[in-house]
Length: 267
Image (cartoon, rainbow, N blue to C red; front, side, top):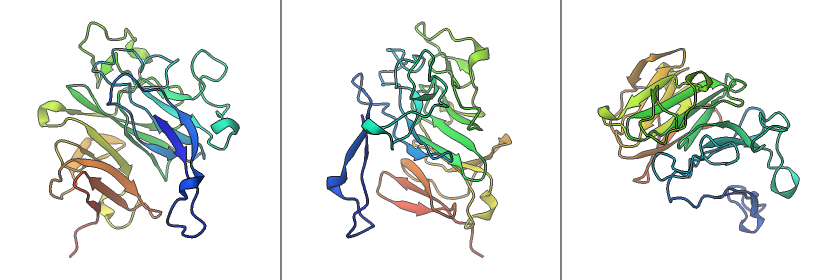
């Protein structure tokens, strides 16, 4: 798995220059074809955050998520402007300690979508579960530093049902703020954003997300996650990603090739 940088074309600023490709970081991922991760995003601190899956295979058989010597099953934080591809911020939690310097948080299964709340320095992670629970993790950026989100010792709020699960004490785990049950038709959460736009005022301050299988977009109040509700639009097939524009307005994409903006009801 490679994170690469491209520079904007001088002839057409809407395009990237193919010749400008520069490899920033290579992360070995040879165990299985799934659980690669996917989200790459600059945080409010100016550093590059990378979500990586646990390597796949079901149940994290290689114990990557809990291993601080592996870059898989993690949230990484690097500075891509460093020499030799990248450098590591000195404030990363495992600099000078046992573990890879690039790790910012660990214990994740497949955080292929995460985001930052543009108004508050908060991180939200949609972590795909095994066969029972999908997780929504929401916490301050400082609180996430060195956090252990529990996989593969926990799935959601429960101990993971496997004899090979890591024996992590509950007190060392950062629990999710909300979970989605597979018994309700969920299978893989597609993490979104805390809405800060103007086109859908009723969603302001709410975390908007979806599930890949269920196809229903929902929202919850970060301070009261039990107040979860559909946002009132039709189901979509295989919602794969969310994005926001410079004003905080929200968009989503599906595997049928559509890109849609979320707006309020017109009178």
